[in-house]
Length: 69
Image (cartoon, rainbow, N blue to C red):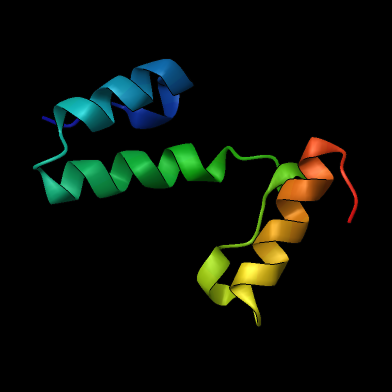
């Protein structure tokens, strides 16, 4: 039943996620494939894993926007 997720493009995976949002097994499998394709160099930390989320997220956003305090 489940398509070969690893052969899908990112766009196809996102469509699959949307179509299967209520199918936990299919959704989880597709999300895992999509997340595994992320470039480690551009990954941002999950905010709740940060020591001081509010300040650190703001700093990340400022950095991305090229601003300084």
